[in-house]
Figure 1: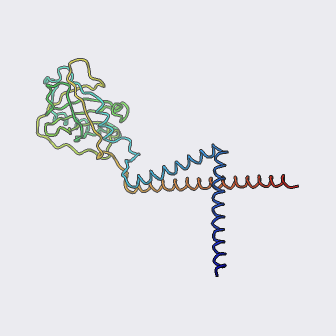
Figure 2 (figure 1 turned 60 degrees about the vertical axis):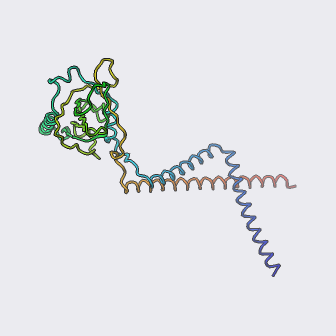
Length: 293
């Protein structure tokens, strides 16, 4: 019995020893292949890094909500473009000739919208929106009153990164009730406006707010004009996110690509190990042939 168990243990140790020798030989084969083929090793490491990156990205995508990459223009983009400009009052802008009620402006814009719809093609129809947006307005003049006032101007769609030469009419209604939001009245062709995930509509105000025409500049003028700056902070509520179904499809595709890349890495490592082992056997056979009498 003692001899039987000692024989079994000897065989067991022999098997483990042979496995360790085989693994060690393959490891040495891979190290020798890497030292002799730097381009192939670099390509292998690039594939492995890419596969691991896709795995990490799929794990992050599975646990976080991601923005929709197909939506290139949203209200965050439009408001961010607006905040790059200064709004400066025109000369004699506060006179009765230039100042007019906001309600009259809205009525005029809505009439223009109906006229545009009736006289032009559907693609060039005009949309008028009155939205409560997260913009903060500050003035360069300490004496300027930033409450119950409206600033009206016209920009091109290119300035707002919405299109080319289409005109966009804007009115900023500043109320004393909320300093972090203003009411933005925008009148523009329908096809250039981001109509997904709109900001909330403005409540109808009974306050008689007069609108002052302003001009848009990229820099503060040297004159003593009263200018207004717009500050905007990105609002996650205005970002269009992927749906759960779209996000699951994206995660599945990332996992599939990662599995394919890992499979390619495994095949390349086995091929390199076998090729180097065959070359080593050929080398040993040549040595034995030279040493034979």
